[in-house]
Length: 221
Image (cartoon, rainbow, N blue to C red; front, side):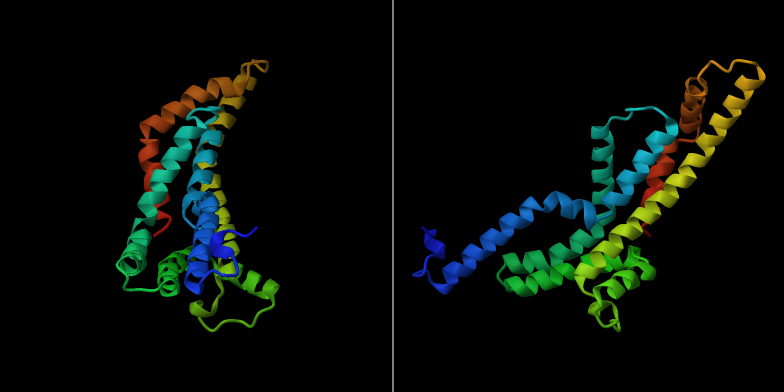
């Protein structure tokens, strides 16, 4: 038996309302994936994970702390985009000045602009070629379903590049400590155990968290 709003006797307005509710519920279930894939969260959390691995501190900071920091940095980076979506689409829609389709279209534009600013042309061209659609003349002609995967792999590349740079100074410390231990004949002593305090000391002395937060935010400039 069909629900009242989806029955044959339902009015078109009731059907439209029911469909909107279903779409809204579906979007809410996809909210975590949308947060990770359509914002700066992916790059930030990968960089922080690389940092923890480079330090060699195992589970310190814990995952909950890294994810929380990544969420707040994501909110900071995405604030101009979200503010524009709120002013251009959400507020007029809530005030009844815009229809649902027009509000969705306006709300999509700032997010697409952010993704285009962080996506390499090479990655966009790859997915356009694989989707076998005509080459668009401008950004407006690029479908969103093409832009999203291109944005994601661009973010992954940027995160891995920054992660590699983060690894270098800590890797040098590991090499130096391992060389000193070998020269002293202490080959049975794990180099990581000796190098860890020096890596933490270096990170604290250079005010590492300040530099990491600054580098992450500026990488989206």
